[in-house]
Amino acid sequence: MALFAGLDSALLTVLADRFSHEYVVAGQLVFRQGDPGDKLYLIARGQVEVLVHNAQGETRAIDRMDDGEHFGEMALLQDVARNATIRTVTDCLFLTLPKNAFLALLKELPQVRPAVDGQIQRTLLNRARLNVPDSSPTK
Image 1 (cartoon, rainbow, N blue to C red):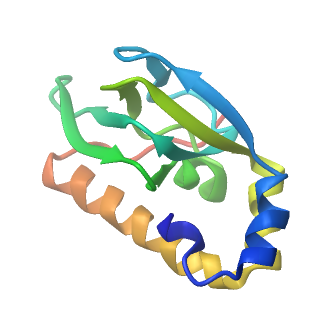
Image 2 (spheres, one colour; image 1 turned 90 degrees about the vertical axis):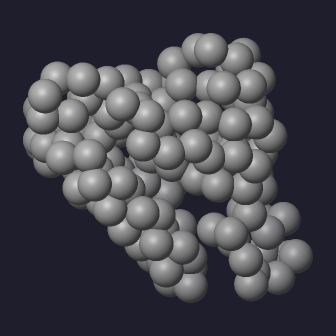
């Protein structure tokens, strides 16, 4: 997984114990745009599509993600609502990390931050390309 590239196997073993796993069948929503952010998702197996409501009120697919990719970090880092809806394309196995554990992980392992920031930039570019309004703060 790109998020943890470069970490040694001993550290990866320690990290593995912090994650939970969730299985979601194809065609199901993982979360909706506007939901509060509560955890980070890593795709262990499967594929998801990223859907957003644009300024014209249309729902559009802006990205697809699969094995090894992660999502949900923007809502956790910026304390905003989920900026997209995630729907499974195939059956998926996710590794999940609660918000507080994710934030602690970034403090403990600053070398993980570039991968997180790269995903945020990818998201922002996709949203700008489709004229999607910014997320509002979580209530």
